[in-house]
Length: 441
Image (cartoon, rainbow, N blue to C red; front, side, top):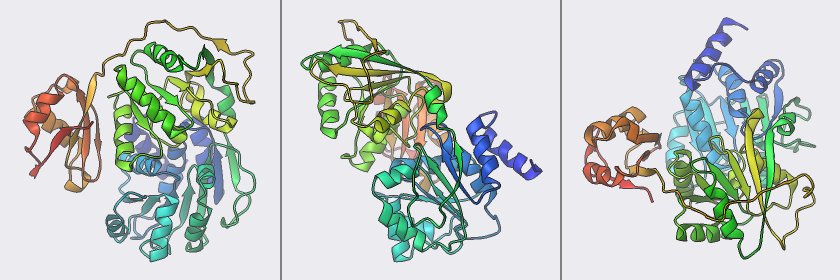
């Protein structure tokens, strides 16, 4: 490896606090160095983002003030996550993020400053291309991250709009969590070099367990099950958003700290709920398949299928949230006596599970605090931590994850100190900015 590549690799690893790229990342980086169009097939959560960001950053020209790389992702959550990962690498290159629900005016302003990298969803990027606010003339690299998901969601037209405005001589990195057949016609190539690590999915140490119940007692069975997980993170998957909301109401009635995620929610609420889950404010997430792929969710120990998906592919992606890359994990099927297993599953070989009759709700340890200042106010995580400790007089051990957004910040703090902290800090100045402080319910 050349000295420049070695230096960049060391920068990536030290920025992320890891010692080495994993086997899949090394294989993709090596292949991408010799092929202009490379596709990475690997399970959800295996580190595909870091795999393609390394050759992408390698290919950027620090002397060219132009948009050089475009990363297309299927969801707003993944766009935000990718931006955060890129910024954490401290490359010195600028990144702009575009997605529905975000201010179009702010995005146009950011794109007008010609960041080297643009991340966005197909619909919003198509909007910018069509109105001329995204200059594609100098783009040399295009990433189609979770490409199979973008196609599944029906973004063919929008991606076609984007590709028609590209110069046509760019490199392409594609990632997918499933094998793909014929590629869509808007791509300017037919046969990318494939790096296939999907076999890792089959090798994961995932145990499947069956909790048999009656229809009447299914929710009670779920509560008894999650009571056994103590403070370990768990996602409960449902097929439909109304099921998520119904279970959430019932869990709230019994005092279970949890949060929810589905496509019918406002974007701000989705982001806030994910923050609560990532921060450990709550350890239980009730969700549709929106949570099965492409989200920045930490290693999950327990996956519960309250409703089994009709297709095996969705079942695999749900389970991909745990037992990643040879880690161990548990997957539970909660099945009522009048429900049949889908064709891809057989009761034979499933370990039947019994749970304690008593279900106890564990109180939440952390609360999420909102502050009305963020990146656009030149606020850092260190500024937030210092503000909470020095002005709020809390101990460092009372603080959890701090997340900085454009015009807001969120901090996990011990629930016991949160109310007094809010009263003390609301209306105080943080780096000359008078901030609103409140608990994020």
